[in-house]
Amino acid sequence: MGWTRARLRLDKKESRRIAFQLMLLVGLVAASTYAPAILTGGPTDATPLVAAGLCAVVFMWVIRRHVLEKAAVRQRLQSVSDELARQHEFLGELSPLDRLQDCLEFVVQATAQRLRCRRVSVMLPDADNNTLRIVAARGVPEEIVKATRLPIGTGVAGEVFLARRPLRVDPAGAAEGSAHLASLADDPHAFLCAPVMLSGLRWGRTALGVLSATGPIDRDRFSDDDEAAFTAIAGAAAVAIYNHMTQASLRKSQVAFLNTMANVIEARDPYTRGHSDRVCRYALAIGKSVGLNEAALQNLEAAAKLHDIGKLAVPDSILGKPGPLAAAEFSAVQKHTQVGARMLAQSALAPAAVQAIRYHHERLNGSGYPDSLSGPEIPLIARIISVADCFDALTSPRVYRKPLSLEAALDILETQARENILDPLCVATLCTLIQNGLDISVAPLPAESPLVPG
Image (cartoon, rainbow, N blue to C red; front, side, top):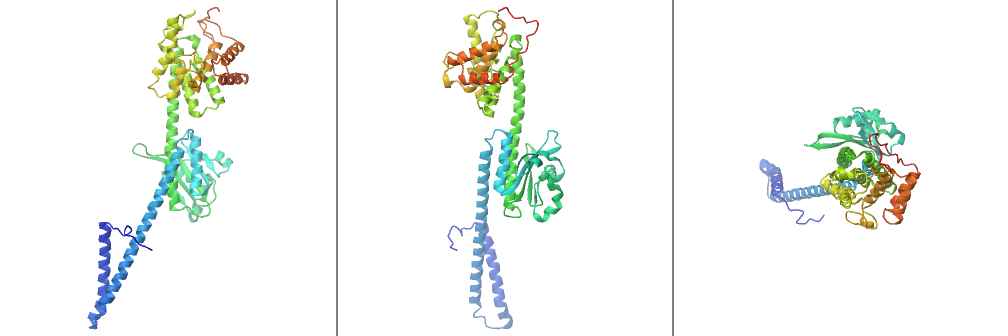
């Protein structure tokens, strides 16, 4: 093995340790060489030469040992670096996933590939937080996934979840734990089980679930490196699951906020009661049919719920006017799109949702307001809300007219689609949905709000 200066560069601590070892060994060699000659009175002429040779051998042995230790350390550091790179790649692929189920499926797939094992499962507690169930698995029979309900604290996974500590079992120790392996849908082979757990000052030690891996391929047990990688994956999965749970909680709060604000808007005018809910229902049906992803559907729902929030700034005398609006009054109504966007600009709503609120009265031919956008300049979710809003306005009673029939409303939508006012795809999609049974029922007006004769 060739040596280079870089490989033999020692720090002060290592130099002192090697010097001490050499001095000790030289002393021992000298003592063992000279002692017999002194004690017996024999010749000592060859003793220095023998001692020097032995010292040289010892020196070479110490240096070689040091070089081997350095090589082992470098190899270990390289392994750690490679594992960190894999973890970074894993997190990079995990983070963009929108749905919790997609995240869990990715975790079990990545675990199976990284550990080269046959079966992987993730278990999360039920709503009552007393029972674990399999929410994602690879290599586990479907009937086992559906049937498994493991009380927390029982079985391998239940004990790991409760103890907040990982567990590794080799084939020799599997027999004693085999009574619990049914909960993991496994035979008595080596397996790993770790809590999907958050830790730190903010969370303490909070277990969110359990990750299990069994049946290593082409070997009879998991290695220390396998266990380290497995624990790292469980930690990354914990962060992802926590993020999704947090987003779900925020989503629930946002839905409550949207419902409250929609009720505030419609409380001012009995003729618009249920308008926001219906527009939201029609818009989501169109959005799903045209293939919007989950994030876009969430933005669409928020924007549809609050598309008229700017009308809070429109005087009641204008909103409730039974006849045609004057130019100044109509201008005041038109401003509700800009007012609504400004009201929500600093809210938790995504910019795409705020944009849709501002642009839901824009028209493809540029005749809309407030910015006279045209064609693809108008965001798709704004175009969807335009169609849903127009349809509900036509089929709902207003203070100045009775509702139109379904046939008349659809004829108007199709005409505006041909004239490049409303989006043709969205209009065609809504028509198809209505033909297929989309709920378009409108709640009756209260008795104290009679329609003005039309």
